[in-house]
Length: 489
Image 1: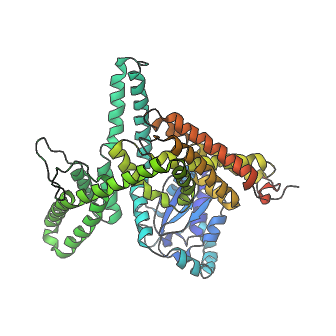
Image 2: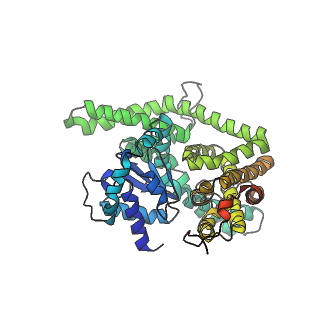
Image 3: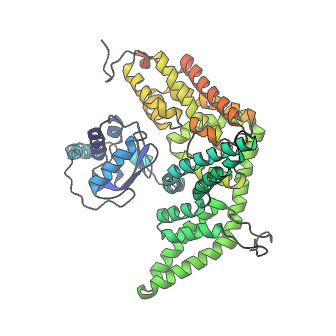
């Protein structure tokens, strides 16, 4: 896709969402352009889905346009540059519309009445949709940092194991320690990063969110302690972790807004920060941290129990259910749970199981490629989406291949379930970091269990391939076509 095509794709997206004047803000994540819309009735979802280059559309409080990795970055950059803002910034109320997207504006307006009822039903605000939107906005910007720091940490762990096994000389200790320091720049201060992002998302002062993250990580020199008011035992640093940070910053946003509203302007700059930080610092330490610690321990214990007791059955259910969660954007809610498990136990056993869903997609795509060779349009799309599928990015395969065809989406879920069952049966497979899956997750598997994860991957690839090849290929997909989708002569 040339630079001109990124421009055209951005223009066409604007044309089907009511223009720049209908955008509140936008940003990109791993594969999507996430757009906050002012008036949902002006959005032509059906038209968006038909745009060449758009792999799928997810409707919610934030409109998510799936265009694939790499493409999303360039298209989002063009769209915000055209509006004269940065990603996540508020769009101006009036914009200078000189782009070619104007040509489709009248058509968008004409279609608004047709999709009115559907939008009202699909975009109904609920508390859980709002929660998912907040979690996504807080953690999606951190994913590149998770990937970079996680891979560095994984490499350091491999070198450390090799040195312990005397495969590397002791002189490598310095290099290993340096890599550990670099990786810890992310994970050691994750609460602060999350606190700052949460404050931005909830409309509070970002620095206040960072302070809350630092409070949760408090460090007192022994024998000094802070009591847990509920148990009487000393409060542990980082108790409640990210869950506590998110709850505290959410409450802080209301406290800060209350003081801004009621404190006179002349002294607001002094007393609002003082009272907000003091009150929420005390509430965080003595109420939220003990409560969040209890919630966190319960979640981690429940997940570990499910994987341990359920074994292959639990692995199959989790692996098979994850693709629908990705399709609806619900997978974002698992991010703080993964991170909390890593902070508490050193790894998340949930991520390797869920990663099998993407592997099932890969197997399905290969089966379609083999059995639908005459469909040049489909095979061209598969060739474009398959490489990133191996790297754990599943949206192009979901929205571009399996979901539009119907049955392959179901067989891909079954393939993911097969891989999850293998990992659940073998047990003890955990990842030390998040932000990646598929093949890139291999270096992050802890305790020498990478072989078990690889077996799960192979099982998911094979399961998705076999089930799709024999049961999941619709006849319409085998019709001969040219690369542009026209019938082959």
